[in-house]
Image (cartoon, rainbow, N blue to C red; front, side, top):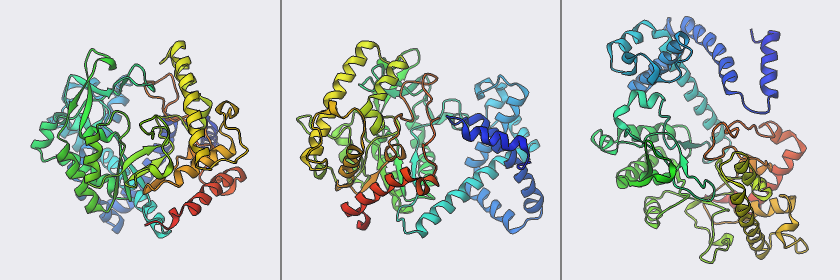
Length: 470
């Protein structure tokens, strides 16, 4: 099948598409994964081969959490095939909406192969992550894979179906208005029911940390302020009408610290946005690294901090997926994207452009002050219409020279991509999470332009002494 002209045409079309076409990619992969699974059933599961026994050990280790997830996936596939308009579990028959119902148990028994297939997929993911981590460590990368713990789960996803009591009803989580999202952000998922988590001994939270730590050396906690407070938006209200609700922070942080020690994983808390000083103090006390971005690090006078003023117990980076890339920041592509998506009007567009011009000048000032730009280079931001080579080199060098323990450069910033991956407060208005990298992993080693970016980054790693840091 994979050698057929139809398959090759589909593959070529997907690879040539300007954006990732998730539905078509998933359909193509599932077709072959199901064929591989059928072969596994025949060769390994039914014969109890060594490979089949290893899968059985995986099933026993993962237990009910994996089984509930697989049952949900099988139910979703089955019910959607019967009714193509049934996209989310609240649209299922009432009996199927309850994971403990007799109907769900009967489905599990009748469709055991379909359920086992989705467990098999998770096993393959686990094996591939283990292999990637082993590959990295064998090449003396002390951290290896850097994982990300998502803020929450989709309101209509498997977690809400299987663990509904652990979520509060009648509201959603988001963020209050700011310069990047003037109307605030509505993330559309419910906050946790902390009382139920506490009564259950925080089992689900601990498992989420443990499983994300299994095959990696670093774990980023998205929006780590969630452990302290969340911005709740009541149903029927928009993101401008929410309020912060405090959480049981000490319990969550202690569990996080315990699991990081057990799994020998560095934990980074994404502490961006409206952060109370006590939050960072608590994170620091438990050895959790803070998250420092070039755009946000300023002193009390509003000037960008010098690189030696960054904290050591931190990960330093240029940007995140929710913020403009370096090239996009300099070209103001993010501001233009917000206006195109109608999240800001013309007056706000002009205000943000004026603010950005002032911010770019402050960036130039600190780069010149630290002698990272050539002496004869223009000192006025207006003379730098785009992120030129010297400016790109200077910013990467600035970040590398900070004393912060970890440095992360997004591939988009390494290769000067113009557009960011995600534009907050948008859905269909922007191709969120659909953009492809300019260069494949292989091209980073073979393409002359990509190799130039990699060489520049390697040069700063050597010059800054980061290569030899513990």
